[in-house]
Length: 119
Figure (cartoon, rainbow, N blue to C red):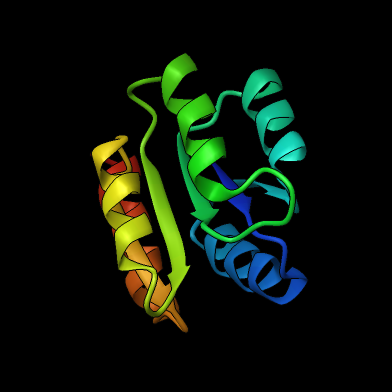
């Protein structure tokens, strides 16, 4: 079973992504902050990460740096509110494979995860 780590401080977004990805047959891990996210990444074999940019404490860029340092091949999708394009570019430069602007199309996210994880 492929595993997806969902990192977002908004419970509604975590639950929505969780529900859709579970229906696709993925194992999912939900993290509300950077410490939880890195703990799951350490303990589980993660195949893909959906990572929010704006998280209290350790922000998305910081989490992305940690993930890429340790697991350079891990595919990471960034999720961002509209208008954070400078931060988006930094994330892409650091190795994120793509970003979704909130509110995103949940089916587009699902299809992209399917493409990357089953490749």
